[in-house]
Image 1 (cartoon, one colour):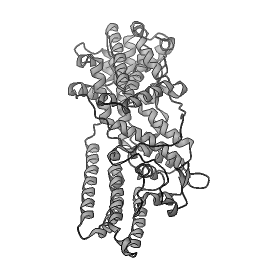
Image 2 (image 1 turned 90 degrees about the vertical axis):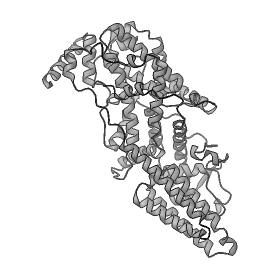
Image 3 (image 1 turned 135 degrees about the vertical axis):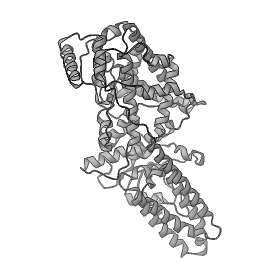
Image 4 (image 1 turned 45 degrees about the vertical axis):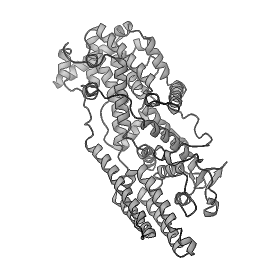
Length: 536
């Protein structure tokens, strides 16, 4: 065990390990930005000081959004379409890649014509980033205006142009279909649904004879309502935030009974526990959507402008996933500190080291980081007698992978290796990539902060949003992997519902296991006992 851990003093537990919930979405987003976890070898959880590495690299080909992968070829994102130069000279290209443009020009590039359909990656990137500049219902209204104008031109044109009305209508419906499937939450409010229905009504007039367009629109609307209903139901049945143990008086009086359950009595196989953690991770992350991630940028812009956007989509999905990380860290610390005998406590520490190692091998970096963070919390890190009996070679390797130096270079190398393995994998097990979520969020945040949304000439810096879109696309690809492990209800019930100690309770349990060794610890121990006894 490193000397730094052995000399660890009693400190206030880091905010990232706290399970206290922040209900305000803006406060939560700030907490994600500024209180993320970092683990240095032999040190407890610290505040990150990230720098974004290698951003805005040359764009060549961008993978398509998974939902449309079966429909797409290998078209290059941002490349000039043959007829786009005639439509608008506003967008700026470099080496064939779109790098900037006015909002109006970018919207025009989104809308199909008789002879043009936008690249799917452009559709995804623009719809994702447009919410930074314009509300979805306002964007829909502008798209509708362009569609109606083009429809009127075709209707008053030559017979050949009139014959293309059905083809034009099909392209508009395809755009709306992709929009509603990829970003269904854009249509949650009445304004957006009203604009969607208005566009759909105008487009159905292009094919009143056989009603094919009307049938497609009807199916699209039905699928949209089902998607919105499913997400609404998920939020209604979401689990209540788990509260830490509050009976601190009992903890002062006695240690847990030997018959009380612990994680080893439920699952003693590190691999199986790592698999169940991965199952939970994939289940939680499946409820995070691209617009949820883009809210980080929207929130920060609102804060920078001293405005509070009351219509900002709630960040519950991000908050719930962040809370899972915190709860897992605290559960690890609780399981270790509550053990009475040193030998059993040592075994518990070594068990979690093995679980973290198996998480790393699977590609579940988020659970791995949570476990390491839990073991680096002060109440656990100060247990010198326990750590002296632990074989720390494996733990040192894990901490090396999560070393925050050079912007977490070691972790990023491991993540890149897992991503490459996933791309060429034939089995679901090899496809699993679960990044450290706080680091992923911070990468997006700092990428947003170091590059302006607009260039000096007022145009939107679309090159920046290509890169943000690329990172979010990678995350969406990873989250869609089907979990190859069977659910073990007994293990998962324990992981999700087992009592976890509060910060104060953790310190009390730690001091009862191994008494204070210096004046600072003795003073803290005395203060804790007095405070909690007065509460009882």
